[in-house]
Length: 417
Image (tube, rainbow, N blue to C red; front, side, top):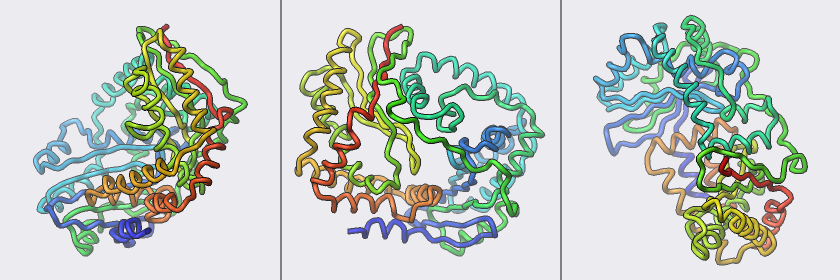
């Protein structure tokens, strides 16, 4: 039953804008609103981006000293946003269809702005230093930092979000130069979602971006190291944080890449273990004993591994008992697997939950962009759910016995200092 995924993929029309740019459109004529996402193929994992302060160059380009660009956006009641993720940078806009021409003109002027606000750059420079100091008592940050350090080598960019960043650059000329290279990289996408026809989208994309360069600079692509072997990781580690009155526990390992053939089995197993209010972890740690208000699983990563964790928290004096229960719950899950009823419930959830990611044209466009960025076929992520529905229970439990082997996991504890 792959129809939902196929329909999702078919909803996106694509065309060639120029030699280095693809256009994409998801039509939705229910409201006179248009969302635009311009994606550039470089992110914070790129050595070139880090060496040239590309994130600063990109996200601050709408800050001119007179605030003229933002005032124009306000006058149009248009939303604009600039952001850079691990693998890409995005310029997003949203406006009424009647204001599309003026909004596209604003977008061109933002991408051509050479008057960055030095005062804003200096404020951001100070703010970055303050935020870094604040991380010292941020439990989530400290545990995630410790997990990243246990999984990845010091030069692996997957550690970048959890290490001290370089100060924000205040050299406007260098920032403009970097931005101009970034927006000309081949591999750009101009995506539209909303109240446009294909002809209208083609017209709006025409001339929006400068002509692309034929080749990208050296160092654009991420350089990732192998994940550290489980035997090389500390099996137990305490992260001491001042002013804590509770203990936070994270039992974790490296995550399963999205394109791993075992991923559909993982989706079932993860939901049963920690993916809902009556999951194995919630029942064992909250409902049965009242040891905590929250327990569950989480993961990051994409087609390359990130971290996968089963986590909870409790009052400091209850740390030992809840840790034992957390470990016992994961071990019992590994040893006994799940029931056919739990498997059926997970598949029902996974199928139903897809609707939440396709409520708007903008969501469908984002899913398309994600799959394209990661080299996945359109509809791939949704089709994993249908593949999961075909896996026999014995095969799911065989996966659980391997993936949830305690030898693959290590414990992190955030404890009072």
